[in-house]
Each structure stands twice: as structure tokens, then as C-alpha cells.
Length: 219
Image (cartoon, rainbow, N blue to C red; front, side):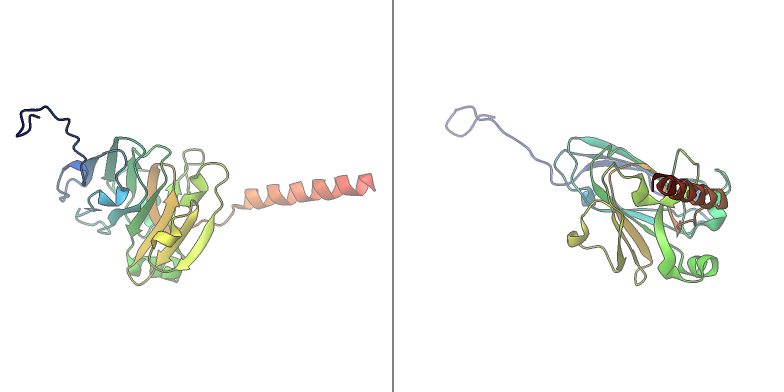
């Protein structure tokens, strides 16, 4: 621009909030596209709540992390009539989330307290889950993080900036929220981390027996 002195000056504009185009969640729609400028904190992304009739009225919120570059985020609650019938074992609605790529961020979902207690016996067992594309089953969300990430349960408390460590996760029973520090996208929900399957336990047992036999043979 040209200043008062008649000289030309360069002007840099740095946005303080993301440029967001959001569709209001209604009985038929609960989706949002948010364009986050590089360097901005993901916590500036607007909150999205599923207002569909018959839903858990789940609210999705990003609590931390910074965009490494301009990022278009796609955030949507899935229709409970779709999918593979996994909704029945969940205490929240399923959230499809993508766009952060390998950036580290914190995702939180609210859960239905009554549903969690009825399904799991205690809401303290509720965790942020991730739908594994390999198995088609829900797992602990932090298990989908990049190699080297260590899962660490931070306990029952609201997320704080001190928790911003990849692989850390928790449940906040005061506010009926689960949260986790992640670096991957997928479909997420609040629920119970599944126990290892019988076949998985048998496989682990067989492996242990083989290792023991191998050690015995070497003695």
C-alpha cells in the first residue's frame, strides 16, 4: 500500500482465527469444513455438535496442536443408520475427521453418561476410540499414532496443556468427555477399549510357548 509519505510499503496480514465455512448441524446434517491457516492452533476450529434426532448429541472439539501449513479439515458425524452396526456398543456418535495429516493435535468427544454406565458398568472406563482400517474394529485411539508413540493413560481429569504429549489420553467424568493426543485421522467415537479376542490370546499363548521351547532347546 502507499503510505502518507507517498512511499510504497509491504503489508503482511496474519489471520488470528481460521477461515471457516460451516453448515449448521440439524436433524439431517452435522458436518463442517474448516480451513485452518498454517501456524494457527487447532483449538481455534469451531466446535461441532451432532443435533440429529436420536443421536447422543455428541460434541467434537479440538483442544490443542498447531497446523504445520494451511489445512482444510473435514469434520462430520456419521448417520447412525449407516455403518456396520458398531453404534450399539458406543457411548457417543461416530465422528469422521480428516485434514490434519501427520500434525499432532488433541481431539475430544463428549459421551452419553447414562449410555456409558449402562454399557460398561462405569463411565470411568470410557475412552476415545479409533476405527482401525486394518481390522474394521474400534481400538484405543492412540494405538493409531505413528511409530514410537507410547500410550499413556493420564487418568480422570480435563485436558490441560501439560498433557500435550503424543499418546497421552484421558477421561473427564466431570464434563463427560474423552480426549487424546493424536497424529492420525479416521473415524472416532467414545466407548470401551475392547479386550483381546480369544484367537488373539491363543496366538499370544502359542508364541510364548514357542519362545519357551526355543530357550529350553538352547540350554
